[in-house]
Structures are given as C-alpha cells and as structure tokens.
Length: 411
Image 1 (cartoon, rainbow, N blue to C red):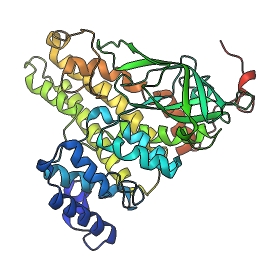
Image 2: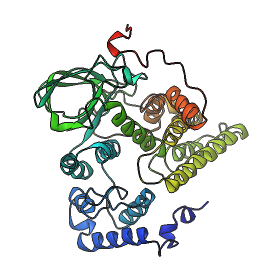
Image 3: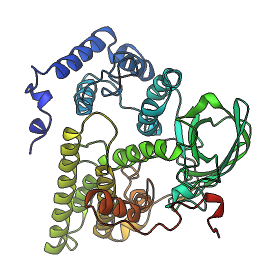
Image 4: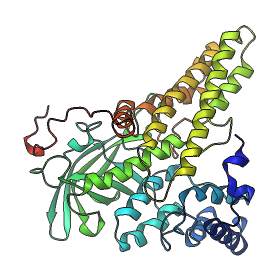
C-alpha cells in the first residue's frame, strides 16, 4: 500500500468532501496569513490553534473544526511541507492532557489550558502511578481533602516522565477512601511550581533521569483546577490512558522505513560480511515486514477512527510497538558485534526532550526501549485489555472491586 493511497485527501480523492474542503481552506488561510518563516515556531503554533488546526476533531473555538480526526494527518503533511516545525518532543503530554480537558474540562479550563499547551508555552506531565499503585492504578492513595474552595493534597507519585520540565501535571487523587477504589478518585490539574511539589530524579539504565518521583506535601489546588466531577477521577483517567497508549503505539505514523527499523537497516549495511549471514538477513527482513505491517495497521486504525476518544485499539498498538522495538534494537546490537556494546556515555543527565525509542544512537536506543513494555501501561495490562475488551474473554477476578478502599489490605 503506498503512502498516496493511505492519504486520499492528499491525492485529492476527497476534494468534494465538505470536511476536507474546510480543513484545506483553513490550511490555505493559515499559510497565506502567517507563513512559517515569518514567526517563531511557538507563534506559528498559536496561529495554527486559532485556525482550528491544532486538533481538528476538537470543537470550534477549542483548537479544532469539529471534523473527523484522520484529517489531522493532512494538516501535518501540508504544514511540514510548507516549512513548519513539528512540536517539541517535550510537549508530548499535550496528546494526553488536551483530549482529557476538552472531554471533561469546563469552558474556563479549555480556554485557559488548551492553547498554551499546544503552542508549547506550558508543558505537562502525568502524575498517576504510585509506589503501591502501578498496574493496579485504581489502588492509588494520594489523599485530597476539601478545604473550602481548595483541596489539600498529600502523597507520592512515581515514574513521572519529564516532570522536571513540566509546568502542569495531570494528577489523580483519593478523595473519598470510604468508597470502592474506582469510585473515590478525583482528577486535578496541578501547578508544578506550587509550594509542596518536590520533583526528584530517578536515574535509568541509560544514565538519564527522564523519569522522576514527585512528592506532594500539603499542596493546595484550587477547586477551579478540578477536571471532571468529584469522584469521577477514574472515568477521566481512562480518557488520558487511552490517548496515551494510542500516542505511544502509533509512533506518530512514521514514513516507511523510518524510526527504529531504519537503525536496524543501517546496522545491517555497516555489518561485516561474516555477520551478514542468510539467517541474519532473514531476521532483518522479518522485522522490516513486521514494522511495515504495524505502521499500516496504525494508519488504517487512524483512517477508521471517528471523532471522540480512542478505544482499546491503542493498547494493541502499544503492546506491538513495545515488543517490536525491543526485538529490532536487540538484533541491531547483535549485528554490530562488539562495537554495539561500547561507546555509550552513561553520564548522569536530565534530558530536555522525550523519545520513547531513544533517538538515533543505537546504544541509547537498545537501553531506552527496555522501558517500552512498562511505560504507558505494562505489556501484561495491555494483554488484559486486548483479551477483555477486544476478544471478549472473561476478565480476571477482582475481589476488591466493591470493597471500600480503606478496607482493602495493603502491604
């Protein structure tokens, strides 16, 4: 399947379609009124938001045009071709916070958060997992107590990617411990510069501290920053999680042969003749086919997606990508021989950007993708979602589902 066939809007196959025509008109207006080279990347993204081309499936006035989400690809292709820069990788969490706020936030919250989130003026992070609540996310214990028009929050979060760069955090708390764990949660936007927010680095196998642990001590959050109703934190969180898995699993719909598989092809081309055996070639080709099949599957899922938030298909893509990235980088290191095991700098550092595949450095990528099967939901959890929500298999027994959170035994 060619890229032209995958993107019929680009080929003009949908020129008579009203939604496509509306998007094309907005693109033309944006590029004619605000050429990318006439302003900074941040200013241009502000103009893009104002034209409804930030998230095209969002409602008018919220950075969207209310059209089908697959038309976003047309926007990105046209703007990149015109010289517009892609979003800062450290702004990744706009793909999670944006859909969450537009789905569950108030009009005031949409007006306050969406535009600076999209432009990159304000970065976000995710404060979900806790030391005792990782895969069992609903078991979290960070406490939020109402105090007039504010909430006082105490607790600890962990594995918080780029929290050291974030201006705002998506925070889920335990607001009523007397209710079952899924029913007593409340979701907030927390200012990461608030008194009592302490971000500490977690050094990874790469030497970096891309992840963090965040301590919250008597942090005061205005009730105006509550996202969704009190006690509806689980429902709001599902919107965030589904968008996270889709964002990770899709890999941004890369071009054929790009991404991790390009690194493997390069390793093959640079490998000595004694390593380029028939068996090695067969393995490289198998992985190339798997990478292309996943890429096309993600494009098909994107083309079939309707307006709204993604479903369990994002978990399928995330599971497949995690396993494929690990296989690709392992094969590339094997092809590189001893050279693939040296030359990497393990110096402690706090990165200024985010890459779930580790960029173009093979040593870094090999180590970084070990986290792919953990971050954004473990592969075991992805398999549970696939089994229960896609295949319709019986769910695992949940003996504490209706038990008040405060009565659930904990280690």
